[in-house]
Length: 303
Image (cartoon, rainbow, N blue to C red):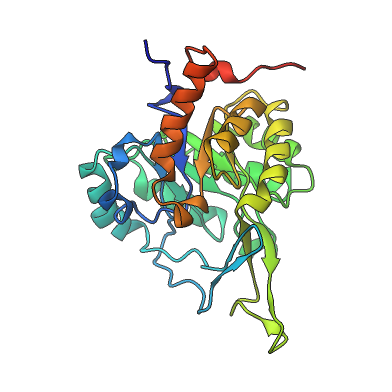
């Protein structure tokens, strides 16, 4: 008998715990040419905003030791084009779709959520609270519990979709932020997002990225992400989705062992396009090898 890979994220049941992270899988179209994307636990889309965004000027991505630094600038087609074009494709592909949304104000977050409400083919929303809050002078919503709770509560009031909140590693106290958004009605948390970073060209002695700074992702992030997942898991009661430097089945098992219910694969999609189905198979083999009949049994709360 094959082990059970199904996991529960609020009222959303996923066929397995392997998702692909926002910004690393586009809208699924390119990867659908390589494998059946309906086999994934879920696809988390590129961040979707109220209006289309071109993003930052080139160059906006660079490889560094142990990862990537990207300054894409949240480029996307906007919510209306997403519903008409991209969501139609994903629905036909029978993918489980989690839409990552963002805004520069609470009002924008709410407006995007309202546009998506009732759209066919969406399973959940992921709230990116690592965006600049323009009305608060440029600080991120995810930095402190009060602003994180404010935006989560506002979106919770207007959506019936399961609500996942993506936390920022820049928070002074990520557990406090996690508890605040849990109290505001979040059904689950995903963590972590990228860490601010830059790179310098030694010949010109100037920053390589046109935007100067970007977000660091990849294997270098894993120990930090793993610690934060471990801590947050023990600070809240809602499910945790682990993100950060997952490049192998073993990496995924570490996050599941720390308490994550599911994981998201990010940077690895660029270097190993077939990694997600490989990790699904790897988790299944791990369960068989360790005589576990359910993926949820990987986690042992030893504290």
